[in-house]
Amino acid sequence: AFYVVMTDLHLFAKDLGYRDTTWERPIEDYDWGNNRGFVMMKSFDLIHWTHSNFLFNENFEGFDEIGCAWAPQSIYDPEEGKM
Image 1 (cartoon, helix red, strand yellow):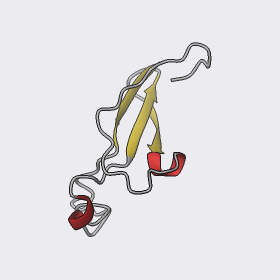
Image 2: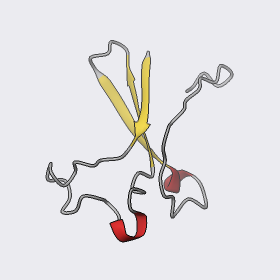
Image 3: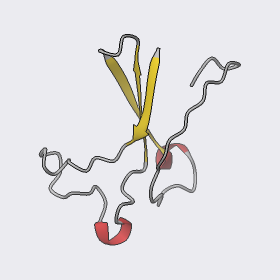
Image 4: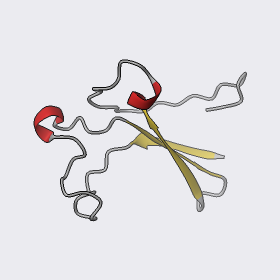
């Protein structure tokens, strides 16, 4: 399988009609800090993809006010058989 891990920054949400604002959270409070997690994508043929969203504030205590999740790095755990 092929994997891609990226930030969930969705800068074009307003232009595409998903939101009324450029950012999901107030720019006055978070500025560029509007990406709170990662998007993890998986493909077996590089044509068809599945994805899941991972938000740190939903999975770890103390991340309710996370600013930015940047530069994702992923590893494969052979003992768990998972990314």
